[in-house]
Amino acid sequence: RRIMSIVCHFRNVLFLALFAMISLSDVSYAKDIKDITSTDLKEVIRSNKDKIVAVTFWATWCKVCQEHLPELNTIYGKYKDKNVEIIGVSLDDKGKEVKDFMEKKGIAFPMLRAKDKEEMSYVYNVKKIPLIYYYKNGELEHIEEGYTDSKHIEEDLRSCLEGSKPPSKDTGIPSK
Image (cartoon, rainbow, N blue to C red):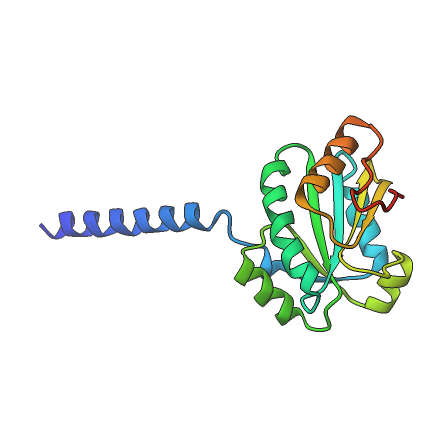
């Protein structure tokens, strides 16, 4: 009887552990937020050479970014298995704010925080956020500045995947 009780207990613990692993597989990367320099970011982009990489610059205090990141997260879920990587670069001063935001919104794509936001903003010409840089094979393909709706972001990703010219925004602002 004692052995049977131990076996049942072990089975329950194993079941709970398995359930936790499955349930947590889509949990955000918030615990993995790393400070990064502009040079480090270039290496991250290069290391994903065989993928389309969309790098979004944002901040928790930016109201537009607060809407934009959950939309990007949905797109990330659709495209992460299609040779696409989305990487966030926060321009916030404190990592805890970024982590809290990501956990609250369930953001699952990789997130980095600019170690020196002035240098990062200068190197990547960040004048307005949110800002998305699209790279293919480590080379810059396209830039979208300001709010971009999710349909347009998907069109941008498809154009990078297909090698076609990215669409211009409906707002009349020409694509760069």
